[in-house]
Length: 156
Image 1 (cartoon, rainbow, N blue to C red):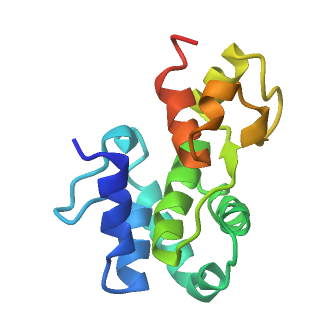
Image 2 (cartoon, rainbow, N blue to C red):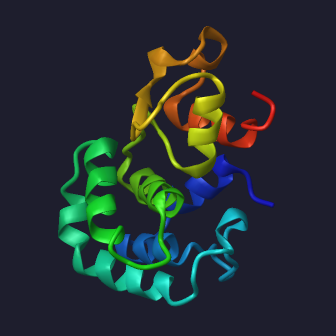
């Protein structure tokens, strides 16, 4: 199992943006293996995402902040049946790694939303500011806090 930092380093060091888009859209590593938590994505949805993202190459490259990239990804990918909030966030995070764009907000999707709800936060919101989190979690970066809320949702 690959850790998130190792996964993001894989995307940071791809030889081209086309390679980044391919691997991010198909949610696959250099060996063609699907990333652990994205096995449930409909098989037909990933090639559709690749087509859409490849066509939007210049728009993706023009993003100056992760929030802008995430909003664009949401707009482009949400219409594809079988792709949800987690896929959109993860794909934006992977492409953002290559573009040197990191999240400033904690984006809420399935598991992360459950973790936030357990802490009494984020009702009907797309993201949280890091300073809205309890003090012990605020020491984490936004993407680390996102992972924390998702992984530990059942314990919060």
